[in-house]
Length: 194
Length: 279
Image (tube, rainbow over all chains, first blue to last red; front, top):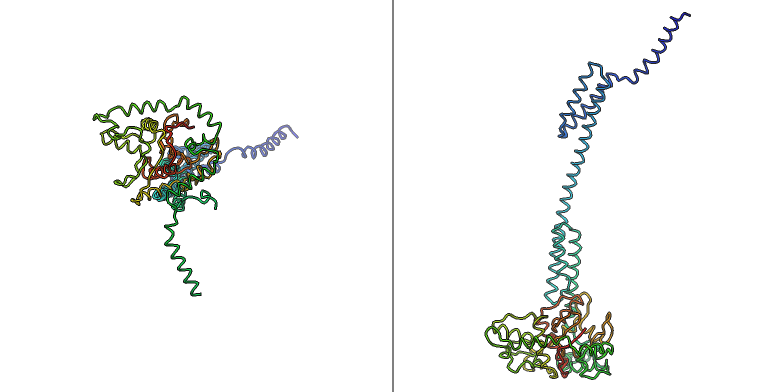
């Protein structure tokens, strides 16, 4: 075997092994085209969601422009970057939208909680006045109603509801107490034992 | 059967008609009231009930007697004397309203037939002021305490003799209303005046001995150590109401005037000994 034949064989063997290996890390046009297509899809989705995509659209064009020059790896990098940016922008927009919906739901809940608290305060005031009409008002009822009013103004509807409920209960008990004691008189223990 | 029913019906009619005759009179109720406390505290001479818990608490009494050597209400008496002598802006004085002088506390409270209401001394003082173009004094504390202290001091020794006139049923109604206020449970704690000052008189509540109600009306206004100043009887009513977590009535309003009427009547026979010093 001559050296020439050996060298040719070795070179063939190397090329048979190295070329496939080399091809495995060298980007293909198809990979670049696939990356660009994915980036385009993300870009369209982002645009449809009202996100400003001018910058990422320009990046995709840049990636496409690299294909004729066979700079597939760079094209893939740029396309992937554009895709990531558009996807990130979409996730941010989705979070904001969820927050808006949640805020809207919170506002609706708050409105109904406010109404509940105000109705409870009105009921408590009515109960207090009823007790007062028969001299049965308790010491703290009016203050509890006032504190409930303040809590509504500061948005503490649960606290307002709790206070108003307690105040209403006091008013009802005060009224019942005064009615039960309307005929209060000398108790039996004060009369001399027969 | 028919006879039984007839008999029962007759008995019912008789009982209904007789009920007003069986109801106790104010005089009988006063006797019941005073007998109860005399029996509860058999070692306390009658006039000593005017000294409240100091009649039944020997250690408290010792402290109180020491305080009475230099009474904290002395300044109030002096100030009240000055008020009595100082003319109003129109030149008149309290003597023009109370010609018999300051020693007239035993005339109050009384039933005013013309106006159909109980009149108390603080009320009369303010009516005098307003009639002479002066602003009324606040009823719980302040200058009224001074003037009342002077008038109480000048009235010491006079015997309480509140009248409930027979010829005006409204007077009896005021007495009954005052009695109801005194015996009615009230407030979040569901206590009546009687809960402490009848049923539990002589027992200890926190650190204090509860005074018997007999004699409560003899010694106001008081210098109360807790207040650090003079206060009126209606101020004490107000404090008691708040303590049982009831909303107090208006000072010198109808409820408290009727209550004072009843309570003072219950102490008929005791000598006035105001102003007083209390814890």
